[in-house]
Image 1 (tube, helix red, strand yellow):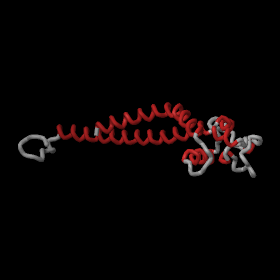
Image 2: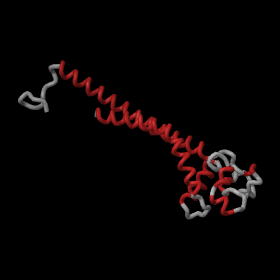
Image 3: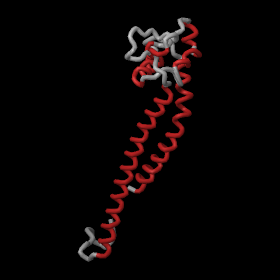
Image 4: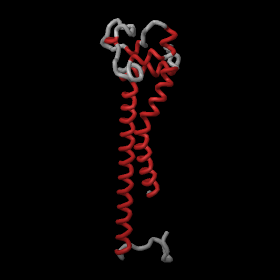
Length: 164
């Protein structure tokens, strides 16, 4: 039981460290994924970016102008961003940079980091609750052991006078 408590405490420390590490890693990873975007549905990176932009209502890494530096933007030469950057309230949005009011202004990096940190906080709270339950169990075991040594009503279950 004690080893589990130590492991649980280490887990909490690891997750606290991850909270601060996440932002730097997300910045690197998201840039790599945006660079591989090709706009086709079968491509996993493209689907992931489109999904994130639609769900989190964001566009680009820091804002929609980030798309101008991607290979996809340069290859298509249509001076637009993916349709997943279009606001749901904008009708007839083509992703054109000439109509920036139709596009989400906030970048996805901040929102992804915020979402990951939120999830990690749930994991940390679960680990802390698990550690508290283990600590309570150890306390109860100590109380029973102390009572047993002082109370003559507790007898050994085996003969021969040795502990099991």
